[in-house]
Length: 242
Image (tube, rainbow, N blue to C red; front, side, top):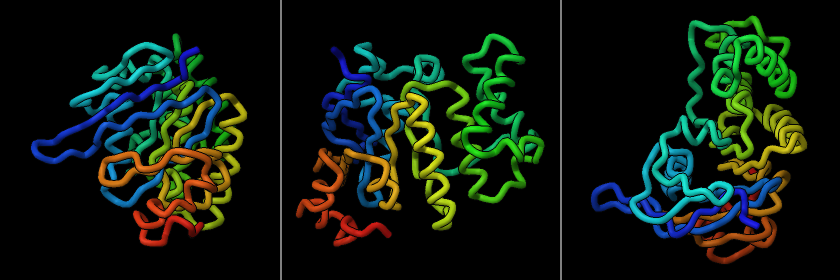
């Protein structure tokens, strides 16, 4: 049986710079996989390649056995792969519910259906009480939840989270961890980039490590974090949950 996602020997060059070099891995349905690495390691570029915002220079990407390398983002989203972004940019002139409804329209036949999906997602992420608030006025912790809600509203099978914990307080990180546990329980397969390692330890049984565009480790999280090459890549940071 094919894995949900298969990345095979994928590379990306920007002129003379290689941002991702011959990266291969697979994600099975129902997994929650962490992706870590120092700044500039190629993590976000890898997300861009899988979700269609960049085209691979080499290699192949398959979703449920079907090659999607070089597809446009909207086609990949409709197939069931969605992502969040590090920089949160809600639709400034819409309220919270309207923001999520717009995202839900991607895979909804009617506005009524999209609104129903949006309301359900807001309950899941804990934003139901803010449905009528102006999205642009939300504090960063709630904007991160809104970004997650917009992604979930497309009803993905596979969701890529790009530093969804970034900029959050310890209490907000704890809250987001609980939200993501609920998302996983709803059957969404998750891959998450994080510099905050506490959620990686708590949520992800498996972790990939990138350094200078190359995959240097892939395995059980506790084991990966103890590997000498991972500790060296982080200059000692990899064994911390700070």
